[in-house]
Length: 343
Ligand code: DGJ
Image (cartoon, rainbow, N blue to C red; front, side, top):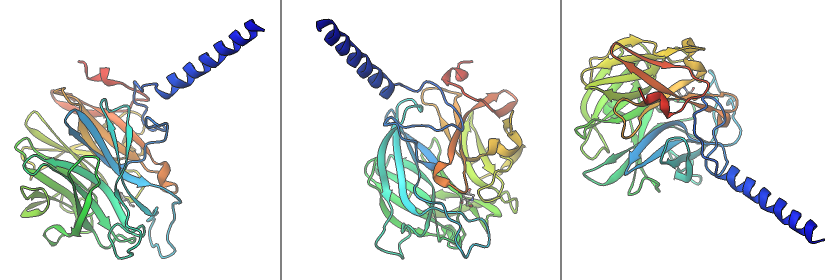
């Protein structure tokens, strides 16, 4: 009898130990394109995202895609959509294990005219920190369901985990603004990159000192080359920009360009992707480049692998950018870890 009780106790202890270790298993490697769970065990839901590194913590912001994906009856092109639920935020110390911090910019459900109403489009949110004002500023693509509004939206918060207060949307310098990102240079100046002029030309615009508004200083780049999904980083005094072609939710070939100044002139280098499906960006699309904190030469390219008929199941492809003296590439890996940056 005593032996049976002891065995039972042992079994329960082992099960608890197993459950505990599974729950707290730290992810050590990246598995591009596979389901990526947060620390609660739920798939990370932060599409078209960007990263803010602030005081030792990374914050990942993205489109929180929930519910059914629909193709509206009126659609004349494949504008598959889910209702807007808001912008999510996750935090991490190592870029691998992410804690859900909640919806930091929620949809506005009771006002059909509001930019954040579920019937609208809110895409590619990016957050930057303004050291002068102490505010966290979110820029995003705001659109009508049929993508004709083509605006940039701005929200602000006192904390990286929100809640962000939506300010307004507008067309920077009266230009259309769709796929977008923001980039802060070492001197604290921030720039907005967005697909403008019916997505044909990429505008790059210096922001005001508080990062809340565009200045009139902007340049037209990749004129009539239809580049979208901009992702920017700086290495060794040069600026690099990864972008995609323009084919809705479908993948196409990525391109990287280099410049001596953020506002250009940008020179195309070519397709940085190598390996399996490199000509289709691994069936994904760029969204951001994150620099690994504390490392000189360590950058990770973030891509979205869109599932256009079930957008909430879109996956993430994060891959290391390999920078050598005369080349820059993003090789495909089934899995990889931070050791790739050791040499
Ligand atoms: C491509 C863009 O990069 C995405 O953010 C999204 O706007 C889709 N087009 C919509 O088709």
